[in-house]
Length: 392
Image 1 (cartoon, rainbow, N blue to C red):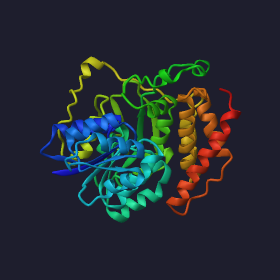
Image 2: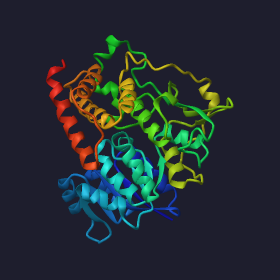
Image 3: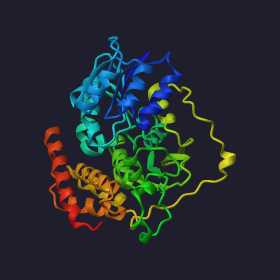
């Protein structure tokens, strides 16, 4: 029986995680659930899973949740970052699903890593922002870091389990990172200027939250995944080749020096990588329908167009620049995506804001996490300053 904390329980990854757990009550118990402001969802989940703790990042939402839960002593309500970190690092917890979107997910994910947990990493920003510092924390504590993004989980499954960070020793020539291309894959540069948030959030294959859907549409999601892959598998961007694969069935591949290419295939359902991480090294039923290759008929691949979708290029450049450049990239992107969703920025201006923010900041390495968070705050301010200068 593994005791699980689900960070971001009300989001799409959190919901999928709980669906897998629901199918295996003999294997998993829920120690804590966390959310930001979705009180109604948390009431329902707490009544079903009866966690020891429920944490709301928003203190007012925590007050509302505490009032609405039964006064039976089963679930205590905590609030804020301190509460998130507490339930991520608790001695009673074996496994932490890190599924809080954005920079807000880094502190509790780091707390889980420092406490030596099995960290199921669905929050790519943790590695994008902190990179070496996060991997050092994992190494120091002996934490077990398992990737949950479908692409990174696919790579993990295609590598020898003892060579995850020794690609040369494993005989790997390249990592082939797949991307759906998003809803605007065939749009011209002119057409991209006028796309709406609703269009950007209508992903053709995956059911995701707004922020990650916009990132997928701009290919920034693939840029962040490129950075994450470099840290997870101890490699460089030139060893990672992005392939647009519209069907989203081949989740990624590993090319070996003997000519073998191993691929992990599956329906576009996050319960597959989640079940893989929860039960690893075993396999359990995830509730996913068997893949019907006859119905699919064919697979297609394209090279990414870096002219129409420059976010992928910006991410690779930020990783190569090193220091806090990836953290600045991530912060500027979060501000730009929020502005786009609020109708204050064109879709095509997202990479413009990111590039301008990077250009006006120094990105030397931070000495510690406090310095990293300070750089993150500075980048958000600089990005906001760019907003009036970029035409809506």
